[in-house]
Image 1: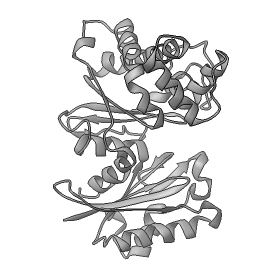
Image 2: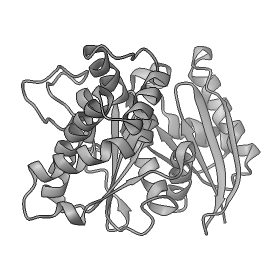
Image 3: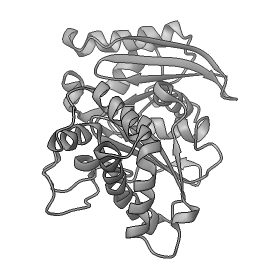
Length: 299
């Protein structure tokens, strides 16, 4: 069976085909072209699905808050043109599919499914994917299945509060993990220390310096890791999770964050569980979202 997945982003639409054994058959990427409007974006998505020879189903991962019952993206700052558009039904109409065979899911959740199926979490029945990018995303797999919760918002690690007096977050609350451990937060914290932090490349240089020698860069990475670990500790305590997969652009610095992450988990958990916790780098990179979406389309 040929499984088709689409990863809808603000800049690019990534898509691909994979078989039931997990062998990648094809992959594609085209500009999203949000400036052309929702109908044009849907036409591009449908075109990709046809090019990939979708037979009767397709999975779609999209950023934002998802209305699963209505098949819509309810809220997403990066996809304003598609908010409240009946994405599932419109894509199904373009493809001639039953709308029930178009599976719409949050992109972090789709990526968690991908990493759990073919990536770093493939040996684990329970895991939390954490993505460190502009924000901090998350997707939760329990007993081998995606758990999104009744409102579709389970696994939102970025909005776990680790300091009620901390910086204000875009969600309207204070002290979220996102304000401490995202790439955006890392650049802010670097600037506060007088370190170069104007571009993603500066974060790569910061991580490289932290690897090379002791100094403020290594200290900052340890502090960021510790704050991330404090957030992950809540998942360890509540769900007894033992596997975390870390991805996203800033996730490439996991090796220099790791000691801090473990320290933060140990600080905020009990029962001496930190030794059993595995913190793994994501393996699928930009393919995780569409692979997970394709897996969802196999249901």
